[in-house]
Image 1 (cartoon, rainbow, N blue to C red):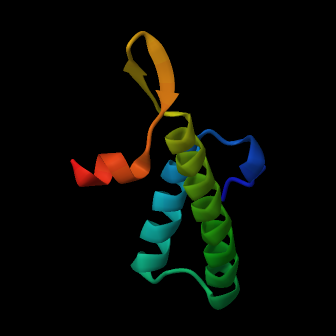
Image 2: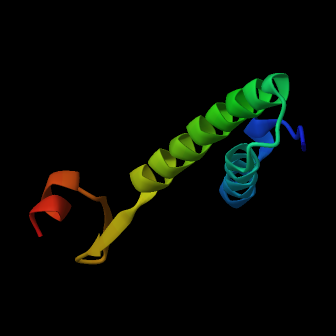
Length: 79
């Protein structure tokens, strides 16, 4: 299993590794210790992906009257 530092991973790379971990665990062929290690790595990858998505969401801007403004989540949900 790739042990690239998670903090250095791009979203797509982390997501691909997370999907590979899920597939290997669903296959049921991992020994107990390997399953535990895969689960722990998967949780860290998931947290990393969630943090990157939250960061991207915070950076979304809407062009309004020639100015960039932060997106109001409540306004988007009302639409």
